[in-house]
Length: 135
Length: 180
Image 1 (cartoon, rainbow over the protein chains, first blue to last red):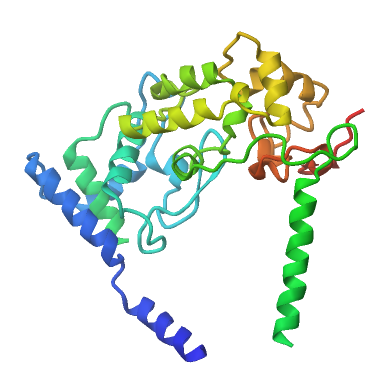
Image 2 (tube, each protein chain N blue to C red; image 1 turned 135 degrees about the horizontal axis):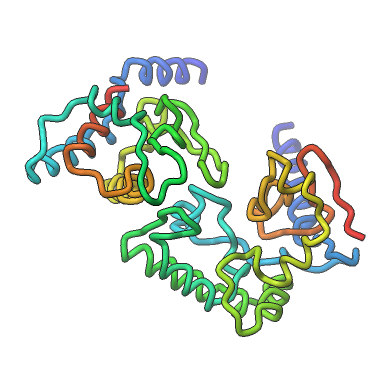
């Protein structure tokens, strides 16, 4: 049993930063955004967007991705309104993240409108996903 | 030896489970089952429960749920939009299990007190307001671990199971709560 655990632990440690399932889905998303005319994608630009503060008509104070998710997407976040804990967004620490196209696009739809005050462009979405996958 | 331990654990589990269905009501006598039907829909748990407590459908009448699910782009000031397929599926689930369609004790109380109104907030249901009306601000609004009446699970320790019995209330920083 101990041996098996050791093998599993070593196995996990040797994996790349992002689990295979998320990597496949993110690759698919990036191709889809490219088909919409976006790209190339830049993780650094995604990182800058992550903490960029936006103000718009519906925001009583400046909002950013980090308002709820914290400055580090590998950390546990906190919903700005309800205070409910938000599991880490980076697939390197939460392998369930970025594994479903529907979830990715739903959260972009909701959270870009809340944060930025509009839908995100395919370029912005590609940059953000590139940032998250590299963490 | 191992078998013995398993059987003791199984016995303990049964005792816990039977305790759960024999929750006390406000007047202290035993009543079967939770106060509202527990959430059984996984889509609901994940879609709605990722931002807030997954309020049981039996906490609002069907008319309230219909109205609420028709305005998710402005959900109490937040954007909670869903793709149409999920929105429809969840609306059907909420409406089918709403307070006025439920036989559970508190659901019947809620449905009766709402009457023909369709309150958008559970905290605007007259019965819910009445049940919480004497709680002072220091315990609720000014308590950073509670902040709002909408934060059910902060004090109702078994809220997720649909049980809101008074003896299960533990207010953060205050402890037991006695309603008299």
